[in-house]
Length: 217
Image (tube, rainbow, N blue to C red; front, side):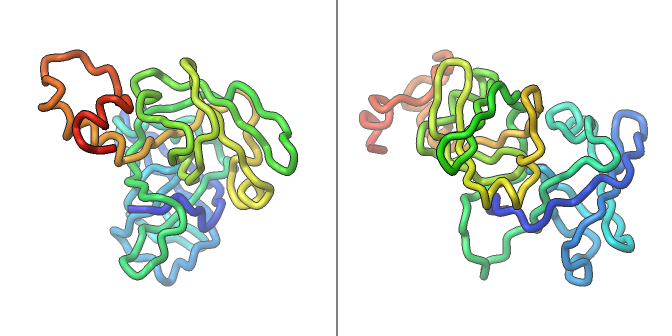
């Protein structure tokens, strides 16, 4: 598990394709002496396993399914990536619980200044958008953020200067494709409610009425 609080912005050194999979080599400033083979590190929000320790970085393998469901396959040498080591039980949970499993990719539609913050508006597939709620948590390329707005086409977030400066989001322009992990709690609640709502009914997402009728609100 992760928190969505980025420890370092690394850079892609090399991407080697192997059939439908690939191995990525990353340069970073993480404390490599504390990282062992087999450790989990979130790379742009994707949970990957360290398979090789290198001078100034590490290597990880990416499966075909992960390449298809994330933006890792589009990385170029020098591309910035958000990095976070796995959460320890003694760590403070400053963001929100992030599993490192990507639900979908969103596309940046608009970026503009709003006071001291930078607003980002994303388009997202309805299958993932159903789990996005205003004031809820979302991980964008591994960064824990609060949802400011939601409509039928997507959602919006606001980043303060510190969050921009400490993550790769500062470099994103309109059209950027980002990894999205929705809130784990929303998916678990829906799963729990499925028997009560009827397993044969088509999924329609959660509603306040459904939560109230089943004792969750």
